[in-house]
Length: 426
Image (spheres, rainbow, N blue to C red):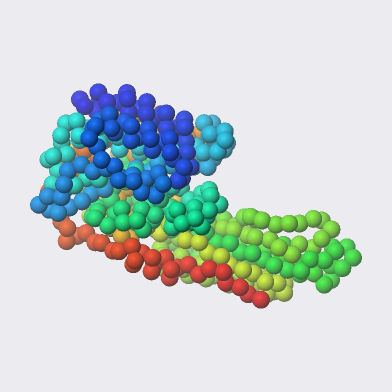
């Protein structure tokens, strides 16, 4: 009954966040609203802040199992200025469903605290409200990096760098499932791609296009050759790795009567595994170098780390599956899919075992202009009630010998082994 009693208020808060989206590391209104409601539930609540807008709060203490579980919700919106409810000033829109994650986290916290059910858990449960999951607004984040206010573009890697997850053993996330479903559906073991963010700056020699094209070195043609090389190389890329490449012109200064001497091509590079991410990045770099060399130009290559691939922890997912089979409110279970979307949960999963439970209840295209929820009862009442069943399945049953823990230092070493910046071919 508790979930029914709190449903209307939780729905109202989540919808208000939906209509007031904020981009990463700027989620100040969202943060204040979430904190204010949590204080209504628990006037003695304690918050620990991190990374501009992120914060945590905990229920219970480490007990006999010495286990610490994190329930993670994401505060930020996507940049989608054409979305039907986008912010007119910032272009932010909640068309990835993060607003529902916040509502679900609030519903779960309110139930556990109000009923004192958290006292029955044989582990400490920490709610982690993370900023900046979406990899965007990069110029703003680059400024934050320069000022030393952050050290990572993504909110979870930033939290990792600040020690937020040092004392945590298990991470649980939830996320909207893309697509429309006729039945109430959840998803487990949906792995995600990892990606790099690559920039190729081709440099040539400008001349008058009519009077003296003969001594020019056309940077635009170098980029065209590069795109052709990418297209011709696709047959060499393993289908099993779900490679995605999307080159775009990011910067150029061209006119029709001057042979262009500068152009920047940028692309995401997504693969299923870290090893193939490195291999494919090397192939792209070779294509860029060869294209510049063929037309007597130069190329500078800049590589930024996006997010690591996410492999969901199959052991932890068994508790979700067991809860589903005991549940009589959710109709369908999707299992063992892969999509080429990415998320910074992949980075956190390097440090500790993580799962991300998907949930239906939406219409429109995720990250699209028409994305909105259509089954709020499922999202804010039924699904949080199911999550309690998951927590109960885990209660006293998690074998710590089946968990793993890596350090942030090890994470940095892995990232540094992937990324090579500012390579120049003259």
